[in-house]
Image 1: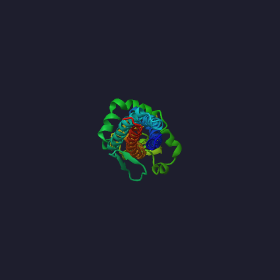
Image 2: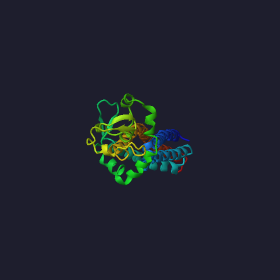
Image 3: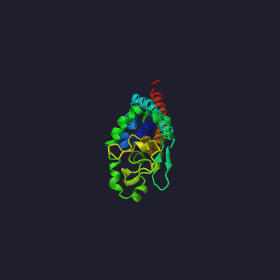
Image 4: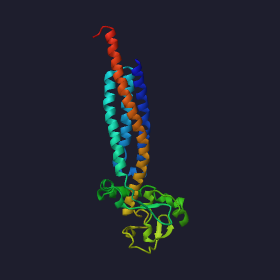
Length: 269
């Protein structure tokens, strides 16, 4: 195996390693309660990571045993996968750029407005067609029930950094003026007309604020935070993949040149 093939094999091994954080970030996203309820976002990153792993393995085998067909397959398909990863990154950045959060005086957590998030997320994630299934799925999780186990007094709860999903779905909007009993039980609103969600709040633990616009906004807030974290890992992985791919292309050309030179020396013209 020539020097260029050695380099290509090493580079493909690095690309193979890069697939691990991509798959891990995809599994992390899919394991979140909100993503468990939104099938649209669950597996694309995992699928791309697995494809990068398989294609890199083909490239490694092709370079190690100099299977030119496998190497050509690797270079073509890896270029497509890198483009797809870039599309996912740019798309995720664009649709998660608007931040619907706002600060509430006297609270450590934020609350969220649905109309401040991107129109694509509103139309494709929390539209009326999808929301009934998502709402039922969220109600079956322990997202809200575990708050009562973590926080007892009002001071504890108001100083807690709860997730956007918990802020939007597990309690009524602060502007309603409900009196705190526990994180999922609120009574006697002093300003019930302050927000349409005030009328949608229910102390029924299977209802809470799952029908509220604030719950939809909280779900999008959770998605935004999780994808922003995952994007950091994906950006690093894609940069390394691009670097590996460019060097692999150069090494592949050099390997072809070495092969032609050997044939020339042996009189194979």
